[in-house]
Length: 87
Image (cartoon, rainbow, N blue to C red; front, top):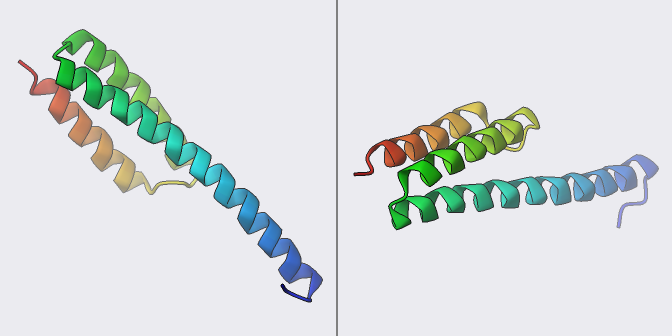
């Protein structure tokens, strides 16, 4: 454990940010899984709704600094491509 007061604070701040980032990443993964499940079931309308919700969550995660904007853009693009490719 650190002895300097500022170092102790940085440890606490890092822990709280890690928890916040984990929660946000977990939420994003859940929304992405919903899109994948809708694609697997073959329901295009449901997939589009899930995609819209997932895109919003990904964008929020990007604005909070959890994901880089290019990563979010790539993920949304790949999900959109998968939904559009449905029969």
